[in-house]
Image (cartoon, rainbow, N blue to C red; front, side, top):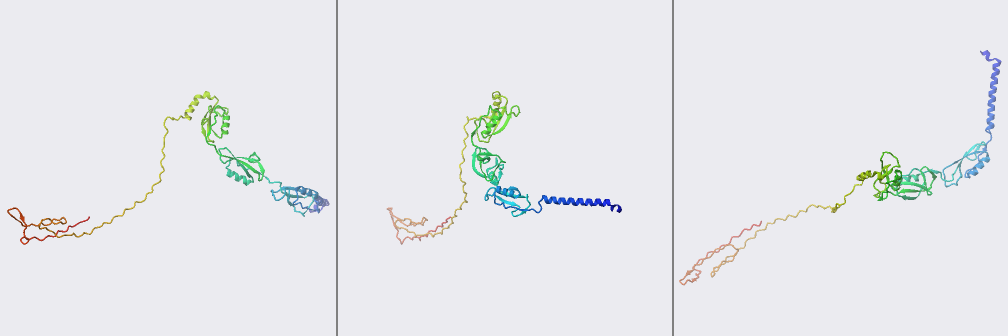
Length: 367
């Protein structure tokens, strides 16, 4: 086996293979050197603060490729002014190399209008301000959605959510002023279901129950009854129920009378109206605790000593002395009656007078 390896034919083939490999490598490097301009470099010109048109012309004259990109709009710089470049100026690159330049756009980048339709005005305004839109005029129109954003206007034209507008554009908004009160119900009897719905929505009312006589959903059926009745006064936003049929209202008179007995109840106005008296609004009494009356002190009077006066007697008249009311002893005088019937006073020496007695003091008790 070793002897066969040193055969001159094998060695010749090996030398030829090595020569072919070396030749291919040399040719490859020569081709790369020619294709990549090896050893040839040129400086990158400075195009910062130049307009994009001048920058492109300079790069083309230098033999460099370019790529233009726009940054966020900055009002400090001029529109289409070159703000950045890569590689930077004074760098050395091969001819035909790519230079990327960043340019200030002409105006703000367009933004997308968010979906704020039928949203409350406070939240809608906040969302529009976040995306960079300015609110101009606020227009109110009748709608059951009070303070809801109905439409967005730009330069007088309605724009839909998803449309793109320049940043910081001024837009007008249309808000709902709320439902109107005491509005007359429109008459839709005799119209088709489709026409009746359009009339009801135009009057700012809502379509309620739609009952078809045959149970179908054909909007060409004729309305033969409605509730509330035409001419009744309701607030906007109330529902109007409809009854529809393929027959005319004249052919459904019995059905209309039956519905009238249900939805058009007659009120007996012959009875006098009930009168309600308002309860007077009295102020709540302030109950104060009773004040106890002062108890009078019981005074016990001191007994006074009874005054006594000496008894006075009259010998001539024999009258009773004036006293305090107590009975006093009587005095008797001895008289001698004569034949003539005249009495004579007895002498003081002949008759003995008893001593006067002192009256007893009364005891007075005061309760």
